[in-house]
Image (tube, rainbow, N blue to C red; front, top):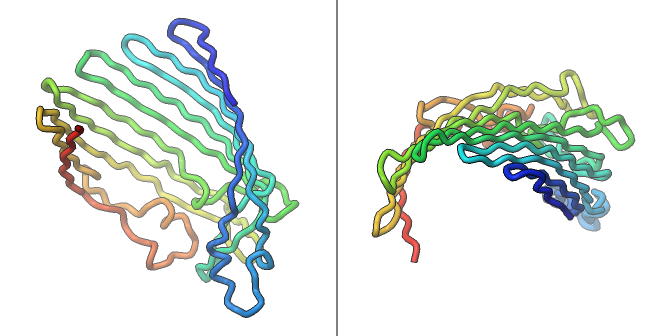
Length: 253
């Protein structure tokens, strides 16, 4: 359930509360059923993951721009946490999890043909090393991402055309220094990077034509999860895509 309060002509606030559930990630456990008489429920607790979510935020919309901020809190008393051991095998633990985060965003339109925008998002997840242990561990890369900053601009140089330049920054992340869960090392390190993309569209009577360039500066980088996981699997440890060109055509009817 939720509610929105418009307390001024350009201002509004919202609050929401919800509860959901899902199945634990039993895919890894199914690979361990390799002998007669074994069953999944004998290897792993199949109780559902029940999550309670709360969110609150505020928004402003004006003639020249908009801005907003929100905060959320998501909790599960019996969550699912996947941990990779030194052999590259996934180990599932049923432990409580808490995920808190916030996001701010803004857009500024100085003219009818030019706008600038930006967002910043941060997630702070916590869990425990084992059931009943203190919740003093940060959630790993399988469960949450690093702080993320997005900045960009849209420009209409001609009628029915648009150019968009956008840069995305993933921040450094070093967590659980010196921490373990049994034989599993929980320490993770990530060196952040910034990527820029450029895209253009042209609307015509015959449809929309588009041209895009991802990783505009052709930066060499290793993705977030391959960097963070302790076991460097050759099949999953690889560089991200270099400069990539794309052409598109869309027609609605």
